[in-house]
Structure formats: structure tokens, C-alpha cells
Length: 114
Image (cartoon, rainbow, N blue to C red; front, side, top):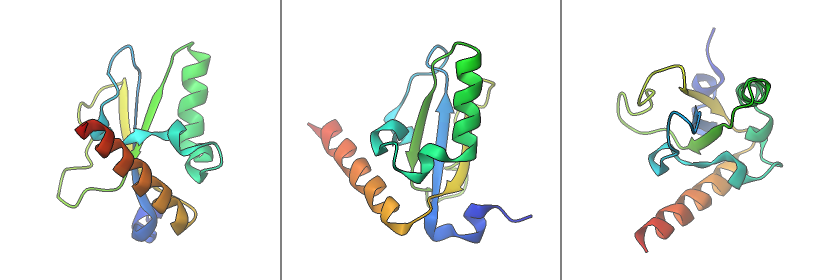
């Protein structure tokens, strides 16, 4: 079975999730999914929903970061593979949502430079 990201690479994004008690949120993971807003299709993405429900059931906080896929082999692998961090590739539902993501990533990078 071919993944949605392989079927529609133009709409692909990389998501990374982690428990703040084990891993700090790092800008290299992308931007905070919550910064894209509840109306963004990734807010309802199945893996996002499952991870948030599991964290809530365990009384844990969870951060989820989103970025565009990298253009070199291995760049999208989980940086620190363990039970407290996961990374997956998925797709947005509409090309305009990638524009929102690009704008947010650009603003984030600009803020880091100042």
C-alpha cells in the first residue's frame, strides 16, 4: 500500500511529536502545529488525533511540529528514536495550506535571526 505522501508528494509535510518531559521542542522540527490554527487540515489528521488522545489519557503534554520534507536522504528520519518522540509524513488537504506553512516557517526563521 502506498502512503498518502507518496501518492501526493506535492502536498507532503513531515510531522514530529514529542513529550516535553523527555524532549524539548526544537525549531529544526518545524513550527508548532497549534500555530497553524484549528482550521488547518493537520489539526484533524488521524495520527495527530491519536497521539493527542493518548497523551491526554496519560495526563501528559505533547508538542507536535510540522515542516516541509527535506531534500536529502535521511533528513526526515526520527532524530532521536525512542518511545517519547515520533516522526511521520502525511499530506495537507489543499495546496493553500502549504502556503500557510511556508509563511509560518519563514516568520519563525526571521524571528530566530533577530
